[in-house]
Length: 146
Image 1 (cartoon, one colour):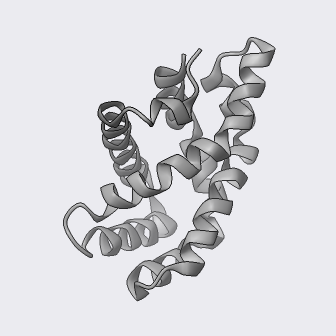
Image 2 (cartoon, one colour):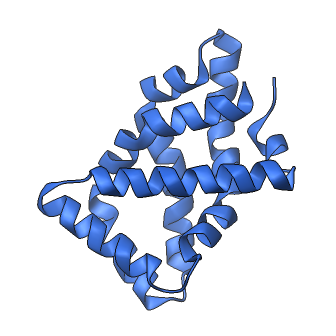
């Protein structure tokens, strides 16, 4: 079975995964409703407006760290003989904690005020939103690791 970090060493596969992650992000943001959804859409729109391809660049930059953060959970799924996507879904809180630890550290170092401000405003609802994205994320990971 492939390791996600190893898969990302192949530039063509990494580019495909980055593209799929951007589509996943766009879909997750689009699905949000209500007042919190409005805030998420506004924040995401502000970040996307920084420059063309900014979100793709950020995803590409974060992907290796995300792969490392998810690797213990992926290994657990493989050790248990579980489907990776389903296992990640069952452990959505742990997935969110692993990914948010990475983005929190990155946001603290951010020099762009728009990015930092948007992240700070949305961070309070981030765990719930990351958890809700885990089914899509799990399918994406499983597709490239299995």
